[in-house]
Every structure is written in C-alpha cells, then in structure tokens.
Image (cartoon, rainbow, N blue to C red; front, side, top):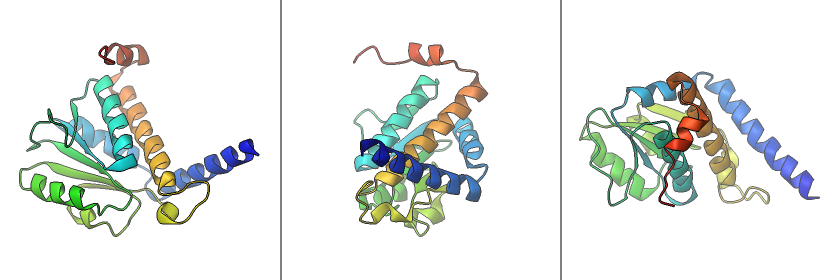
Length: 183
C-alpha cells in the first residue's frame, strides 16, 4: 500500500513538472541566467514555501552565489542589480505583497514562482514561472495543503541549481567545501 501511495505522489509531481516543461521549455535556463546576472539574490517565502526558498538559497551559497533570506536579521537591503525571488503558491500572501511593493522602488528585480496564473505579483515580475498544479488548494488526500506545489517547486529549483553548477563548473566537492561548519 505504501509503495502505491509513493508511486502516485511521484507520478503527480512528474506530471506537474512535465506540464511546466511543456508550457515553459526554457524557464530553467532563463532563471539561471537571471541569477548569474544579479549582483545578489534574495529569497522570500512564507510557511513551507519559505522552507523551499531557504533550501534553494543554501544551495546558491554552496555554488558561491551571494544569497539571502528575506526577513532575517542579517539580511541587507535589496536594491539595484539584485534579484528577489518569491516562492508562493498563491502569489498573494499579504506579507510578501507588502515587501515586494517596497523593493520595487529600490531598484531590485522580482522573480515569481507560483501556482497561480492570476497572482498579483505577476505584473511586477521580470521573471514569472507558473508551476501548473491547480490542485494546490484542492482537498487532495495524498498531497494536502499545497504539498504538490512545494514538492514541484523544490525539484524545479534543484534543476536550476544543476544548471548553475554546470555553467559555473562547480563540482559537488566544491559545493561541500562551502557548506556551513557551524551546524
């Protein structure tokens, strides 16, 4: 029974990612290019989407890219040349909308990863990635409360890490050497 559930979950996530690739075939490459052009990268997300954003930021640092998590006490001000990446299933989280409104005036560019094609942040985003999982709010017994979005976003972002590692010629060993020794 457990293996059937696992297989069903993996099939669901695979279908979402196949749909994303079909509708946005170059999005991983475009996203990687935007990150490489940025002076610094900031990640924003709330709840489990925030955890996905933090995992991505950690791997960016492992690649040697300057990355910060929005809302942390040591995070500097975002400004010109910076890229702010928002990970939000709804794309309408009030705290994220408030922050995005502030950073636009300071010259930072916005990228949005969301499951909502009508997300209010879409219009201000330089880069928009729609994770096509309309069931993200649906009552899904196996992937409840947005899990399909978070799992899909995590895998999508890991694809960007692989693309960046390849472009920067950073090996897993080099990434490991940048891993925190304060844990």
